Length: 411
Image (tube, rainbow, N blue to C red; front, side, top):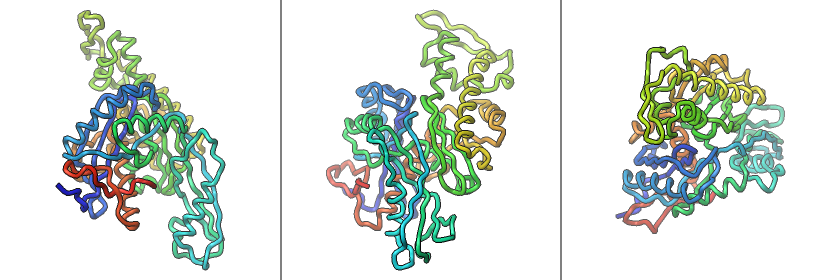
Protein backbone atom coordinates (compact mmCIF):
# COMPACT_ATOMS: atom_id res chain seq x y z
CA UNK A 1 0.00 0.00 0.00
CA UNK A 2 2.99 2.33 0.21
CA UNK A 3 5.36 3.38 -2.50
CA UNK A 4 8.27 1.61 -0.76
CA UNK A 5 10.55 4.60 -0.38
CA UNK A 6 13.32 2.31 0.83
CA UNK A 7 13.32 0.29 -2.41
CA UNK A 8 15.17 1.59 -5.45
CA UNK A 9 13.42 -0.28 -8.26
CA UNK A 10 14.70 -0.11 -11.84
CA UNK A 11 13.69 -1.79 -15.10
CA UNK A 12 15.73 -2.87 -18.10
CA UNK A 13 13.95 -3.36 -21.45
CA UNK A 14 15.88 -5.15 -24.20
CA UNK A 15 14.01 -5.07 -27.53
CA UNK A 16 15.90 -7.35 -29.89
CA UNK A 17 15.21 -8.80 -33.31
CA UNK A 18 14.45 -12.24 -31.85
CA UNK A 19 13.11 -11.54 -28.35
CA UNK A 20 11.89 -8.85 -25.97
CA UNK A 21 13.09 -9.11 -22.37
CA UNK A 22 11.95 -7.05 -19.39
CA UNK A 23 13.93 -7.39 -16.16
CA UNK A 24 12.93 -5.66 -12.91
CA UNK A 25 15.58 -5.20 -10.26
CA UNK A 26 16.03 -3.59 -6.87
CA UNK A 27 19.13 -1.62 -5.96
CA UNK A 28 20.02 -2.78 -2.43
CA UNK A 29 21.59 -0.46 0.17
CA UNK A 30 25.02 -1.96 -0.50
CA UNK A 31 24.72 -1.08 -4.20
CA UNK A 32 24.09 -4.65 -5.38
CA UNK A 33 21.18 -5.60 -7.63
CA UNK A 34 18.43 -8.07 -6.76
CA UNK A 35 16.28 -9.44 -9.60
CA UNK A 36 12.60 -9.48 -8.63
CA UNK A 37 10.83 -9.92 -11.98
CA UNK A 38 11.46 -11.19 -15.51
CA UNK A 39 9.32 -11.32 -18.64
CA UNK A 40 10.14 -12.26 -22.22
CA UNK A 41 8.33 -12.74 -25.49
CA UNK A 42 9.14 -13.40 -29.13
CA UNK A 43 9.97 -10.14 -30.86
CA UNK A 44 7.75 -9.16 -33.76
CA UNK A 45 8.31 -5.97 -35.74
CA UNK A 46 12.09 -5.54 -35.34
CA UNK A 47 14.76 -6.14 -37.96
CA UNK A 48 18.49 -5.68 -37.37
CA UNK A 49 17.89 -3.25 -34.51
CA UNK A 50 15.28 -1.13 -36.30
CA UNK A 51 11.50 -0.96 -35.96
CA UNK A 52 9.68 -2.10 -39.10
CA UNK A 53 6.21 -2.75 -37.62
CA UNK A 54 5.36 -0.45 -34.72
CA UNK A 55 2.10 -2.14 -33.72
CA UNK A 56 3.69 -5.60 -33.62
CA UNK A 57 6.60 -4.52 -31.44
CA UNK A 58 4.20 -2.71 -29.08
CA UNK A 59 2.30 -5.99 -28.59
CA UNK A 60 5.52 -7.92 -27.98
CA UNK A 61 6.73 -5.39 -25.42
CA UNK A 62 3.37 -5.36 -23.64
CA UNK A 63 3.31 -9.15 -23.28
CA UNK A 64 6.85 -9.28 -21.86
CA UNK A 65 5.97 -6.38 -19.58
CA UNK A 66 2.85 -8.11 -18.26
CA UNK A 67 4.90 -11.19 -17.33
CA UNK A 68 7.51 -9.17 -15.46
CA UNK A 69 4.94 -7.07 -13.61
CA UNK A 70 3.06 -10.19 -12.53
CA UNK A 71 6.22 -11.83 -11.20
CA UNK A 72 7.40 -8.69 -9.35
CA UNK A 73 3.90 -7.64 -8.19
CA UNK A 74 4.36 -4.08 -9.37
CA UNK A 75 3.57 -1.79 -12.28
CA UNK A 76 6.37 -0.51 -14.49
CA UNK A 77 6.38 3.23 -15.11
CA UNK A 78 9.74 3.79 -16.81
CA UNK A 79 12.59 1.75 -18.27
CA UNK A 80 16.20 1.80 -19.37
CA UNK A 81 15.96 0.88 -23.04
CA UNK A 82 18.59 -0.80 -25.22
CA UNK A 83 19.33 0.25 -28.79
CA UNK A 84 21.48 -1.32 -31.50
CA UNK A 85 21.86 -1.38 -35.27
CA UNK A 86 24.42 -0.57 -37.93
CA UNK A 87 23.66 3.15 -37.41
CA UNK A 88 25.61 3.07 -34.12
CA UNK A 89 28.92 4.94 -34.43
CA UNK A 90 31.71 6.04 -32.10
CA UNK A 91 34.53 8.57 -31.95
CA UNK A 92 37.28 9.51 -29.51
CA UNK A 93 37.59 13.21 -28.62
CA UNK A 94 39.71 15.46 -26.37
CA UNK A 95 38.86 18.47 -24.22
CA UNK A 96 40.90 20.94 -22.18
CA UNK A 97 40.14 23.50 -19.43
CA UNK A 98 42.03 25.63 -16.94
CA UNK A 99 41.83 24.42 -13.34
CA UNK A 100 40.12 26.77 -10.89
CA UNK A 101 41.95 27.45 -7.60
CA UNK A 102 44.75 25.11 -8.77
CA UNK A 103 42.84 22.06 -7.46
CA UNK A 104 40.52 19.91 -9.53
CA UNK A 105 36.87 19.99 -8.48
CA UNK A 106 33.84 18.12 -9.81
CA UNK A 107 32.92 21.30 -11.67
CA UNK A 108 36.27 21.20 -13.49
CA UNK A 109 35.67 17.57 -14.46
CA UNK A 110 32.18 18.42 -15.74
CA UNK A 111 33.55 21.35 -17.71
CA UNK A 112 36.34 19.39 -19.40
CA UNK A 113 33.94 16.59 -20.38
CA UNK A 114 31.51 19.18 -21.73
CA UNK A 115 34.35 20.70 -23.77
CA UNK A 116 35.32 17.27 -25.13
CA UNK A 117 31.74 16.49 -26.17
CA UNK A 118 31.24 19.86 -27.85
CA UNK A 119 32.11 18.49 -31.27
CA UNK A 120 29.82 19.05 -34.20
CA UNK A 121 27.34 16.20 -34.49
CA UNK A 122 25.12 16.00 -37.61
CA UNK A 123 21.52 16.98 -36.93
CA UNK A 124 20.30 13.52 -37.93
CA UNK A 125 22.36 11.92 -35.15
CA UNK A 126 22.05 11.82 -31.36
CA UNK A 127 24.69 11.40 -28.66
CA UNK A 128 24.01 8.30 -26.54
CA UNK A 129 27.08 8.20 -24.32
CA UNK A 130 30.07 10.36 -23.43
CA UNK A 131 32.41 8.09 -21.48
CA UNK A 132 35.65 9.40 -19.93
CA UNK A 133 38.75 7.36 -20.75
CA UNK A 134 41.48 9.20 -18.84
CA UNK A 135 42.61 12.65 -17.78
CA UNK A 136 45.89 14.57 -17.92
CA UNK A 137 46.95 17.38 -15.59
CA UNK A 138 49.82 19.48 -16.90
CA UNK A 139 52.54 16.93 -17.76
CA UNK A 140 50.99 13.95 -15.94
CA UNK A 141 48.71 11.78 -18.04
CA UNK A 142 46.83 8.50 -17.57
CA UNK A 143 44.89 9.84 -14.56
CA UNK A 144 41.67 7.96 -13.78
CA UNK A 145 40.25 10.17 -11.00
CA UNK A 146 41.56 13.75 -11.04
CA UNK A 147 39.39 15.33 -8.31
CA UNK A 148 41.53 16.92 -5.58
CA UNK A 149 44.73 16.92 -7.62
CA UNK A 150 46.66 20.15 -8.18
CA UNK A 151 47.63 21.72 -11.47
CA UNK A 152 47.00 24.51 -13.92
CA UNK A 153 45.47 22.75 -16.92
CA UNK A 154 43.45 19.56 -17.33
CA UNK A 155 42.73 17.53 -20.45
CA UNK A 156 40.23 14.71 -20.89
CA UNK A 157 39.90 11.94 -23.44
CA UNK A 158 36.36 10.69 -23.94
CA UNK A 159 34.59 8.08 -26.04
CA UNK A 160 31.41 9.34 -27.72
CA UNK A 161 28.74 6.91 -28.94
CA UNK A 162 26.06 8.21 -31.32
CA UNK A 163 22.99 6.81 -33.06
CA UNK A 164 20.59 7.81 -35.81
CA UNK A 165 17.98 10.15 -34.37
CA UNK A 166 15.08 8.62 -36.31
CA UNK A 167 15.98 5.09 -35.15
CA UNK A 168 16.04 6.29 -31.55
CA UNK A 169 12.67 8.05 -31.95
CA UNK A 170 10.99 4.97 -33.40
CA UNK A 171 12.13 2.53 -30.72
CA UNK A 172 11.28 5.08 -28.01
CA UNK A 173 7.82 5.56 -29.54
CA UNK A 174 7.15 1.82 -29.34
CA UNK A 175 7.84 1.94 -25.60
CA UNK A 176 5.82 5.09 -24.99
CA UNK A 177 2.80 3.47 -26.67
CA UNK A 178 2.90 0.92 -23.85
CA UNK A 179 2.45 3.77 -21.37
CA UNK A 180 6.12 3.77 -20.34
CA UNK A 181 8.69 6.52 -20.00
CA UNK A 182 12.25 5.96 -21.23
CA UNK A 183 14.73 6.91 -18.51
CA UNK A 184 17.67 6.54 -20.87
CA UNK A 185 18.68 4.94 -24.16
CA UNK A 186 21.69 2.64 -23.78
CA UNK A 187 23.77 1.04 -26.51
CA UNK A 188 23.15 -2.67 -25.98
CA UNK A 189 26.84 -3.54 -26.49
CA UNK A 190 27.82 -1.37 -23.53
CA UNK A 191 25.05 -2.88 -21.38
CA UNK A 192 26.16 -6.43 -22.23
CA UNK A 193 29.78 -5.63 -21.41
CA UNK A 194 28.74 -4.20 -18.02
CA UNK A 195 26.93 -7.46 -17.26
CA UNK A 196 29.62 -9.98 -18.22
CA UNK A 197 33.06 -8.37 -17.85
CA UNK A 198 35.32 -8.28 -14.82
CA UNK A 199 37.41 -5.19 -14.10
CA UNK A 200 40.57 -7.23 -14.69
CA UNK A 201 39.44 -7.98 -18.25
CA UNK A 202 38.72 -4.31 -18.92
CA UNK A 203 42.14 -3.34 -17.56
CA UNK A 204 44.01 -6.00 -19.50
CA UNK A 205 42.15 -5.38 -22.76
CA UNK A 206 39.14 -7.33 -24.01
CA UNK A 207 36.66 -7.44 -26.89
CA UNK A 208 33.03 -8.27 -26.11
CA UNK A 209 30.96 -9.74 -28.94
CA UNK A 210 27.21 -9.85 -28.25
CA UNK A 211 25.60 -12.01 -30.95
CA UNK A 212 21.86 -11.47 -31.04
CA UNK A 213 19.19 -12.38 -33.54
CA UNK A 214 19.63 -9.51 -36.01
CA UNK A 215 22.80 -7.67 -34.97
CA UNK A 216 26.19 -8.37 -33.43
CA UNK A 217 27.51 -5.69 -31.05
CA UNK A 218 31.25 -5.21 -30.61
CA UNK A 219 32.87 -3.30 -27.75
CA UNK A 220 36.60 -3.04 -27.04
CA UNK A 221 38.09 -2.06 -23.68
CA UNK A 222 41.73 -1.34 -22.87
CA UNK A 223 43.25 0.15 -19.71
CA UNK A 224 39.85 0.01 -18.04
CA UNK A 225 38.02 2.22 -20.56
CA UNK A 226 35.87 1.80 -23.66
CA UNK A 227 37.90 2.53 -26.81
CA UNK A 228 35.75 1.30 -29.67
CA UNK A 229 32.27 0.04 -30.46
CA UNK A 230 30.51 -1.00 -33.64
CA UNK A 231 27.66 -3.18 -34.92
CA UNK A 232 27.67 -5.89 -37.58
CA UNK A 233 24.21 -6.39 -39.17
CA UNK A 234 24.74 -10.17 -39.31
CA UNK A 235 23.68 -12.52 -36.51
CA UNK A 236 21.66 -15.58 -35.55
CA UNK A 237 18.69 -15.00 -37.84
CA UNK A 238 20.89 -15.63 -40.87
CA UNK A 239 21.74 -19.05 -39.48
CA UNK A 240 18.07 -19.79 -38.85
CA UNK A 241 17.15 -18.67 -42.36
CA UNK A 242 19.79 -20.95 -43.93
CA UNK A 243 18.49 -23.93 -41.96
CA UNK A 244 14.90 -23.18 -42.99
CA UNK A 245 15.75 -22.91 -46.68
CA UNK A 246 18.14 -25.84 -46.98
CA UNK A 247 16.11 -28.23 -44.81
CA UNK A 248 12.78 -26.90 -46.14
CA UNK A 249 11.29 -26.38 -42.69
CA UNK A 250 9.32 -23.45 -41.19
CA UNK A 251 11.36 -20.70 -39.53
CA UNK A 252 9.99 -21.49 -36.06
CA UNK A 253 11.14 -25.10 -36.37
CA UNK A 254 14.46 -24.00 -37.88
CA UNK A 255 15.10 -21.89 -34.78
CA UNK A 256 14.35 -24.86 -32.51
CA UNK A 257 16.64 -27.11 -34.55
CA UNK A 258 19.43 -24.53 -34.33
CA UNK A 259 19.13 -24.19 -30.56
CA UNK A 260 18.82 -27.92 -29.81
CA UNK A 261 21.01 -29.65 -32.39
CA UNK A 262 23.26 -27.23 -34.29
CA UNK A 263 27.04 -27.12 -33.95
CA UNK A 264 29.38 -24.43 -35.23
CA UNK A 265 32.02 -27.12 -35.87
CA UNK A 266 31.07 -29.99 -38.21
CA UNK A 267 34.15 -31.95 -37.10
CA UNK A 268 32.61 -32.22 -33.61
CA UNK A 269 29.46 -34.00 -34.86
CA UNK A 270 29.18 -37.68 -35.71
CA UNK A 271 27.95 -38.55 -39.20
CA UNK A 272 25.75 -41.20 -37.62
CA UNK A 273 23.62 -38.72 -35.64
CA UNK A 274 20.24 -37.88 -37.13
CA UNK A 275 17.41 -35.49 -36.27
CA UNK A 276 13.73 -35.23 -37.15
CA UNK A 277 13.00 -32.20 -39.33
CA UNK A 278 9.36 -31.01 -39.66
CA UNK A 279 8.23 -30.27 -43.21
CA UNK A 280 6.03 -27.50 -44.58
CA UNK A 281 2.50 -27.77 -45.91
CA UNK A 282 1.51 -30.69 -43.71
CA UNK A 283 4.04 -33.05 -45.26
CA UNK A 284 5.52 -35.72 -42.96
CA UNK A 285 8.72 -35.07 -41.01
CA UNK A 286 12.02 -36.29 -42.41
CA UNK A 287 15.14 -37.73 -40.82
CA UNK A 288 18.23 -35.64 -41.61
CA UNK A 289 21.88 -35.93 -40.69
CA UNK A 290 23.04 -33.71 -37.81
CA UNK A 291 26.43 -33.55 -39.50
CA UNK A 292 24.77 -31.97 -42.54
CA UNK A 293 23.17 -29.42 -40.22
CA UNK A 294 26.60 -28.51 -38.86
CA UNK A 295 27.91 -28.12 -42.40
CA UNK A 296 25.16 -25.54 -43.00
CA UNK A 297 25.77 -23.66 -39.75
CA UNK A 298 29.59 -23.59 -39.70
CA UNK A 299 30.11 -21.29 -42.74
CA UNK A 300 27.76 -18.69 -41.27
CA UNK A 301 29.67 -18.55 -37.98
CA UNK A 302 32.95 -18.48 -39.88
CA UNK A 303 31.68 -15.54 -41.94
CA UNK A 304 30.44 -13.69 -38.85
CA UNK A 305 33.72 -14.07 -36.96
CA UNK A 306 35.70 -12.94 -39.99
CA UNK A 307 33.55 -9.80 -40.20
CA UNK A 308 34.17 -9.15 -36.49
CA UNK A 309 37.91 -9.69 -36.95
CA UNK A 310 37.91 -7.13 -39.78
CA UNK A 311 36.16 -4.61 -37.52
CA UNK A 312 38.66 -5.32 -34.76
CA UNK A 313 41.63 -4.81 -37.08
CA UNK A 314 40.13 -1.62 -38.48
CA UNK A 315 39.92 -0.25 -34.92
CA UNK A 316 43.68 -0.70 -34.51
CA UNK A 317 43.16 -2.41 -31.15
CA UNK A 318 43.65 -6.07 -32.11
CA UNK A 319 47.07 -6.26 -30.42
CA UNK A 320 45.83 -4.64 -27.19
CA UNK A 321 43.23 -7.19 -26.05
CA UNK A 322 45.33 -9.55 -23.98
CA UNK A 323 42.24 -10.94 -22.23
CA UNK A 324 40.91 -12.14 -25.58
CA UNK A 325 37.33 -12.34 -26.81
CA UNK A 326 34.20 -12.65 -24.67
CA UNK A 327 31.13 -13.96 -26.50
CA UNK A 328 27.61 -13.43 -25.19
CA UNK A 329 24.06 -13.10 -26.52
CA UNK A 330 21.64 -15.86 -27.45
CA UNK A 331 23.45 -16.94 -30.64
CA UNK A 332 26.67 -17.61 -28.71
CA UNK A 333 24.98 -20.54 -26.93
CA UNK A 334 25.81 -23.20 -29.49
CA UNK A 335 28.13 -26.19 -29.48
CA UNK A 336 31.53 -25.57 -31.03
CA UNK A 337 31.33 -21.79 -31.01
CA UNK A 338 34.43 -21.33 -28.83
CA UNK A 339 36.44 -23.71 -31.00
CA UNK A 340 35.67 -21.92 -34.27
CA UNK A 341 36.07 -18.48 -32.67
CA UNK A 342 39.52 -19.29 -31.27
CA UNK A 343 40.57 -20.63 -34.67
CA UNK A 344 39.44 -17.40 -36.34
CA UNK A 345 40.71 -14.84 -33.83
CA UNK A 346 43.86 -16.65 -32.75
CA UNK A 347 43.31 -15.72 -29.10
CA UNK A 348 41.44 -17.02 -26.02
CA UNK A 349 37.63 -17.01 -26.22
CA UNK A 350 34.99 -17.61 -23.57
CA UNK A 351 31.18 -17.61 -23.63
CA UNK A 352 29.85 -15.41 -20.82
CA UNK A 353 26.64 -15.28 -18.82
CA UNK A 354 25.81 -12.24 -16.67
CA UNK A 355 27.91 -12.01 -13.52
CA UNK A 356 25.99 -13.15 -10.42
CA UNK A 357 23.37 -10.82 -8.94
CA UNK A 358 20.99 -11.39 -6.06
CA UNK A 359 17.36 -12.43 -6.08
CA UNK A 360 16.15 -14.48 -9.04
CA UNK A 361 19.64 -14.86 -10.44
CA UNK A 362 19.04 -18.39 -11.78
CA UNK A 363 16.48 -16.96 -14.23
CA UNK A 364 19.02 -14.70 -15.94
CA UNK A 365 22.12 -16.92 -15.93
CA UNK A 366 22.06 -17.19 -19.71
CA UNK A 367 23.94 -15.24 -22.41
CA UNK A 368 20.61 -14.14 -23.91
CA UNK A 369 19.96 -11.94 -20.84
CA UNK A 370 23.33 -10.15 -20.83
CA UNK A 371 21.91 -6.91 -22.24
CA UNK A 372 18.91 -6.88 -19.88
CA UNK A 373 21.05 -7.39 -16.78
CA UNK A 374 23.53 -4.82 -18.06
CA UNK A 375 20.72 -2.27 -18.32
CA UNK A 376 20.03 -2.82 -14.62
CA UNK A 377 23.70 -2.18 -13.82
CA UNK A 378 23.56 0.99 -15.89
CA UNK A 379 20.38 2.13 -14.15
CA UNK A 380 21.73 1.25 -10.70
CA UNK A 381 24.76 3.44 -11.29
CA UNK A 382 22.51 6.35 -12.22
CA UNK A 383 20.34 5.84 -9.13
CA UNK A 384 23.37 5.74 -6.83
CA UNK A 385 24.84 8.84 -8.47
CA UNK A 386 21.62 10.79 -7.92
CA UNK A 387 21.08 9.76 -4.32
CA UNK A 388 23.25 12.71 -3.37
CA UNK A 389 20.96 15.04 -5.32
CA UNK A 390 17.74 14.38 -3.41
CA UNK A 391 14.63 12.28 -4.09
CA UNK A 392 14.29 10.60 -7.46
CA UNK A 393 11.45 8.87 -9.32
CA UNK A 394 11.62 5.06 -9.78
CA UNK A 395 10.81 3.06 -12.85
CA UNK A 396 8.44 0.92 -10.78
CA UNK A 397 5.73 1.85 -8.29
CA UNK A 398 3.55 -0.19 -5.97
CA UNK A 399 0.33 -1.54 -7.40
CA UNK A 400 -1.48 0.30 -4.57
CA UNK A 401 0.17 3.66 -5.23
CA UNK A 402 0.79 3.91 -8.96
CA UNK A 403 0.23 7.64 -9.26
CA UNK A 404 3.03 8.56 -6.88
CA UNK A 405 6.72 8.36 -7.79
CA UNK A 406 10.10 9.35 -6.45
CA UNK A 407 12.33 8.90 -9.44
CA UNK A 408 13.50 12.12 -11.08
CA UNK A 409 13.77 10.50 -14.51
CA UNK A 410 15.43 13.37 -16.43
CA UNK A 411 19.21 13.27 -16.81
